Length: 128
Image 1 (cartoon, rainbow, N blue to C red):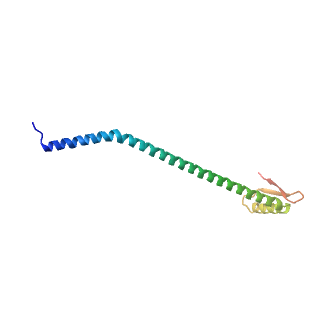
Image 2 (tube, rainbow, N blue to C red; image 1 turned 90 degrees about the vertical axis):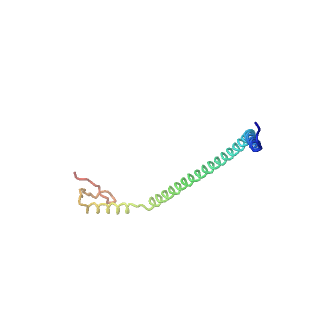
Image 3 (cartoon, one colour; image 1 turned 90 degrees about the horizontal axis):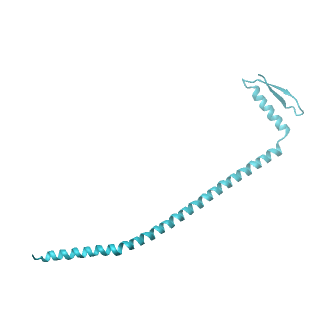
């Protein structure tokens, strides 16, 4: 049996393809694996840098929150200082009288006021 020229050509093409596949397997896959390992390491470095940046941002946010609390505390302390220096017995007496007037106008008013003391602020007694 004789092989035709076309058959010989197809056989040669098949041999070249098989040899090419074998070469690709022997030399291409290890090179691809090395390339992929390098890419994986580079990606891991980028991910770690992103985590570091995110952590730095969280630290800044917490520092700003702490600064806000400090400023609020300073404001409260200043307000208390002003109140303590301007709070007088007369002002307290005025506030007590205002509260008594509000209670006297209430429909459920059940207190009796007895003026006592040097500043005139009454004691309050609840009737039961």
